[in-house]
Length: 117
Image (cartoon, rainbow, N blue to C red; front, side, top):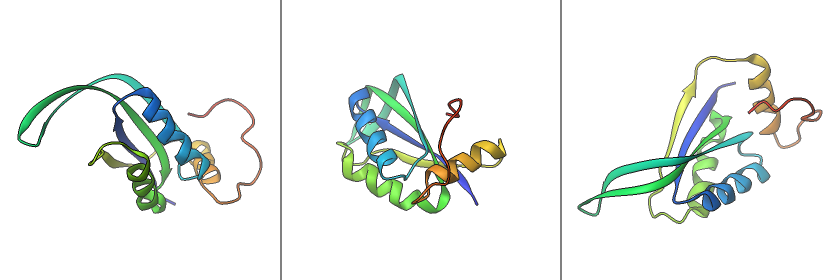
């Protein structure tokens, strides 16, 4: 099984939380880390923009990436939200087992214990 971390930017924390909760409810991601204080400079419609944003790292299975992107686009206020994935090439087997469990239709067991985020 292959895993990815999906980087998404949002205009504010409320939007990031709304997107993250939707993805979690649908079991498309196992975890969403929301990071504040991001400054984004980019060219949009011919002008250089300088905005404050919130970034998220979402952990999921590679096979769910298209569904994650579609769900972000459906919930996100931007016309063209940043949704980019990075392959997770290594890490804790226990963590990846947890990601697989939490992103399956009917997870086995519970998520008891320390937070793996």
